[in-house]
Image (cartoon, rainbow, N blue to C red; front, side, top):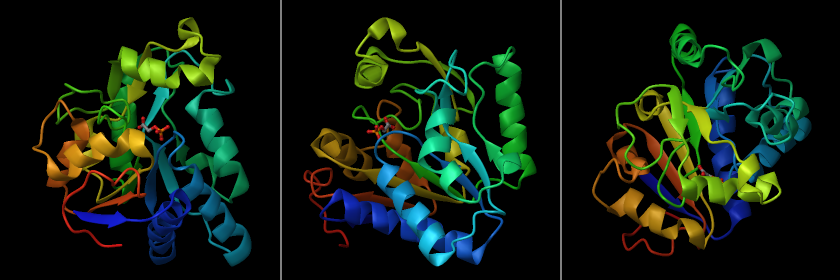
Length: 248
Ligand code: PGA
């Protein structure tokens, strides 16, 4: 596991974008797992810049997003479909036919989850999975206690995560979805390479446990210690509780 400590959010974002861009240049038809949330926004901004100013070509990539709320239509402003289109896909030349985001409105959610796993396999697996981390150590919507071998499935969101996300729903808990479709921890671990970003003091405890704590399902991100090629990039605040020596 490579841990890179950067000073600022912007430096963290640019460093993360370098890894994604290097993969796309080396393998134009790469399969990339994307994440939502506030953390990867800077990385996406930098990818858009690389596309517009340096011609980084997204036309052949395939994408799989980590998760989506159950019950929100793709055009709902808080859906992860909407997020990805507005913050990345519409600004680059990604081919909509190769973009996959879990369908929160699927009639048969269990069947959809199986299909999603089959699609990932059909495309040859995910080359690089981008991840954020929750204050409680969740990855995607795999909350504490999730099976470390889990696959794509429907999950109940914890109160903590619903409260964290209430700000996106007019601070009205009644509007915050109760369920999500999420890739499982096993699905994420099957990616060839992982890139986890964390920013801000709210993530410092989760990063401390993820990098220097014991592996436990109670902090799902700790499983990243078992991955063959994982890079964790933190800014100063998120990395503040780490005691080991890491690269800058
Ligand atoms: P954030 O969310 O990037 O908005 O902090 C990350 C997560 O909860 O996985």
